[in-house]
Image 1 (cartoon, rainbow, N blue to C red):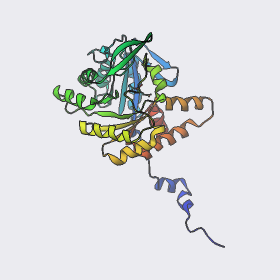
Image 2: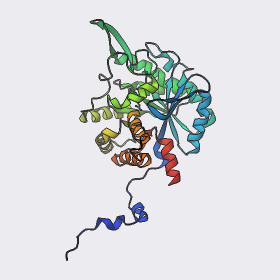
Image 3: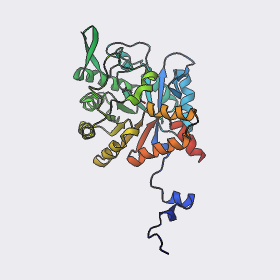
Length: 333
Ligand code: PBG
């Protein structure tokens, strides 16, 4: 009788030995919880395409943040739903804008909780693009070009107003060229040289953002985001994007979405030494929720496996709408 030369199963025979040789672990320190803040009072409105995710007004936000802190989560990422929108997204950089107000509320209650501010204009512009747009008509349709350098100034103003309100980390997601450099300079000039930039360096033009655009009411009114967000077919270009952000002074890099771009996470991890963020985006969340609601999958097991995959691919931290759930599951384990 011949025996197998190698027996992999020796190290798999009990839960304890499996935990001893485990290469990747998830902890509550890995997660950043996104929150949508809106005007009004007493608002806790579920987003139809994202079950379990809500719009909060400034008063109901308090209870939500309390739960987040009690679960041991260290950071939240804020998105705002403004009362009014205009061509330049001015409620994005207003001193009393919704993100700025929410930041003040949170920092007053929980000074240690890290507030990450998403720096973009698409939630605040009436056309839904991430920058300033030059519009014109063609064959009776409204078209527009997103103007890069003109947008940088607005984005820099947005970042400074977010920092002034107390944001701990600036996370620009707009994909204009030179945004890290412009925001870094503006932060430094205004006394915020200590505020890190978590750059959405590698952000693809993805259908996985669909539910988010419902949640933030930020779908482009004409055209799409393909002239500034990346083509999902490209990976060398991802390295060029990350490299320029490093040169411009980014403190952390991000790959977004995560699930369909694990190879990109791994490559960016291998080529750069900055902390790396994976964004487990809205569509990835909604797919899992929908299947779980049908009873077709085991939600906890699936989410754990997905997030482990992102860490194994090289992410140091994960922005995920599952942060609270995951924190609870880890606590129960
Ligand atoms: C703003 C922004 C978007 C997301 C994060 N920041 C939307 C977009 O680019 O259309 C998507 C997040 C998600 O889908 O969960 N630009």
